[in-house]
Amino acid sequence: MFDNLTERLSGVIKTLRGEARLTESNIQEALREVRMALIEADVALPAIKVFIEQVKQRAIGHEVMDSLTPGQALIGIVHQELIAIMGGEKAELSLNVAPPAVILMAGLQGAGKTTSSGKLAKWLMEEKKKKVLLVSCDIYRPAAIDQLALLAEQTGAEFFPVQTGQQPAQIGTTALDYARRHHHDVVIVDTAGRLGIDEAMMQEITQLEQLLKPVETLFVVDAMQGQDAVNTAKAFSDALPLTGVILTKLDGDARGGAALSVRHVTGKPIKFAGVAEKLSGLEPFYPDRMASRILGMGDVLGLIEEAQRTSDKKEAERLMKKMKSGKGFDLNDFRQQFQQMKKMGGMGAMLEKLPHQLSQAAQNMNVDEKIINRTEGIINAMTPQERTKPEIIKASRKRRIATGSGVSVQEVNRLLSQFEQTRKMMKMMNKGGMSKMMRAVKG
Ligand code: GDP
Image (tube, rainbow, N blue to C red; front, side, top):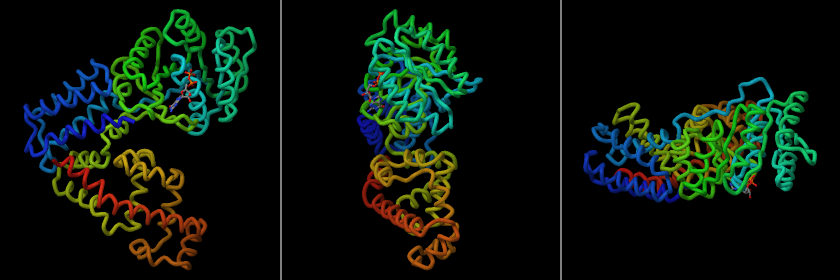
């Protein structure tokens, strides 16, 4: 996703190659290209205008720190503004009401409403330990009701069956009553979608909204529709008190326009993103991670932020060197990576920090967030010598470490091979992708 935009933006950085500092004229040129990139990505024009203006304001007169090139400085600014245009802070799902909390799902047919209802149920059950009831008010399409029933079965959420002849309002209120009596925490109400916005559809969903008083009314919209998606979202948000947006099919969206425009045009935050067809393919939306992903150079961004924070050339150089060399990387560093991962909010966040290709590789390694603590425990059970020289860890040491950390020898083996893989990845980074990328932004 966002492939084109990522490519175009890194091209812009290259145009600043050789420039000693950010000036009005080189900024102008770079911004022209950023604007083109955004237009190509199908970002809504009002959003582009604000974005460019903000970047310009911040870039002109921006002190380029010694440790950064103008290209890097501009990426830093673009990154910050990408975050801002997508809403800044992550918008939480609000469930702070006396249960059951109602979540009303709205959107056009085919947007991914029913699928997202199922995914959201799974997420709420697994991540928030909620008892969820799924109900469909789409009386016009029996297939949609069956689809939701199937999703309920797959996720283990309870499904509220519909009696033939019941109208949406009646279904909604009986389901809510049922949920109250059976102590559900959350009721997700899927509604009928049409192919386009029409009066009857709006009336029906407005009535449901007034009756059920949902704590969240989420508009589900297909990212691949680009600006059309954003316009539909706007029409809905004018008619209904939306609390947020679920942006689906981001996995298929090579342009990224909707992600960048929805918040600006509707004023409503994106709360979740659909990133795969499967039930686990729904993620809370983090503007900062998305911005990093768009720029496709997460580690460089980390470096820039670090340099901005410390404003210290030496510190930036040290970081750069450490990342580039991968030399002397031992289990202490490996443990530190895991500790950092925990601080940064787990594996997901960590993956976002890696450049695109590497993040794919790491995903393929299939590292489970829940093993972070165990991993740390295993490394803690080692002696300092073992941590700096992992090759001395042979069978008897493995047994001792396993006993000490309360895991099996296989797990110790797994950790050691994971460490080896990471070390290899660092070497790869050193040889190819990473240094190339550094050159690209250094100019
Ligand atoms: P509804 O009419 O709004 O209820 O739409 P559906 O939930 O039936 O989804 C329409 C199609 O989009 C289905 O084939 C879904 O599998 C697919 N879909 C929904 N969300 C995503 C997503 O995030 N990624 C991908 N790749 N496909 C999705």
